[in-house]
Length: 257
Length: 61
Image 1: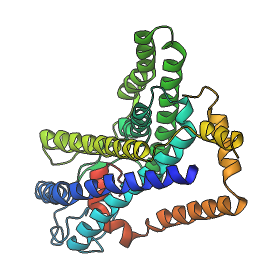
Image 2: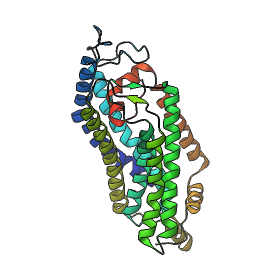
Image 3: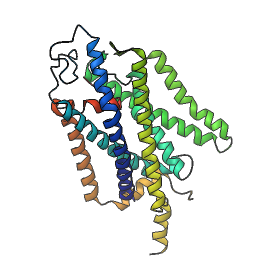
Image 4: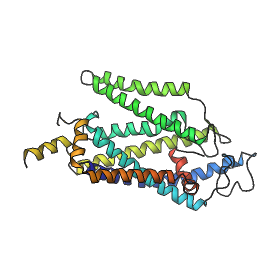
């Protein structure tokens, strides 16, 4: 059972990962390269003689030039995109196996609910404090503290997603619209609190505000699409395999040896 | 649809279905994957993922 779910999750993740790798190759690589050139061009204080070599962050914590070539960065970034999809797909399937009975909806809706919860946990909640960083941006705090903030916000996101699903599960049997409303409360509260309370960590630097907004929008949408694709492929593979809930199959085995 | 299937049942089913060896293999694999992720903080590999980290919104420099 668990192994079947995991297998389907990895396959779904691979499909979504290949699509995401194509996005990295066709959109992200050229875009990040362009933005780095722009950021450095407008950043006179740091534009040294080596600044244009590999789109690097001369100002970042005393980091020197990039250790690898642009071509290597492009290729490894594409591969990372594929692996990212596989990682999310595998983690999604494991979570789905254990949480399937607790998720609202039926059939494929459950997969989309879990994908939305995963997106909220892995990306949206951390981004409320640490927005997607544009090339050439200055970040406050050191990487260790930022990693801790990121992990902490992932935990917060997971709790919020769980509270949302729990609230919906409690109230929707009697009153569906009320259940939906209650499910929205933790998410709206999270966004409101984070918007008001979160300190400004990212200084976007020399890039225009429109370009920064577009880049962040693209990041958010591409990650959301990755999750949606994982859920869609996983749901399709589940249906194709004729998967039935574990307890049912378990009972079948007990009844008819 | 079954009404008896709960999260608790799923944990029980997983416990029944998987042998100790399989569980050890899974834990070892997860540990290895974690090790690989930490290893990727090593500057060369970390740097090579640069564009991807920007694209995915997970960054540290």
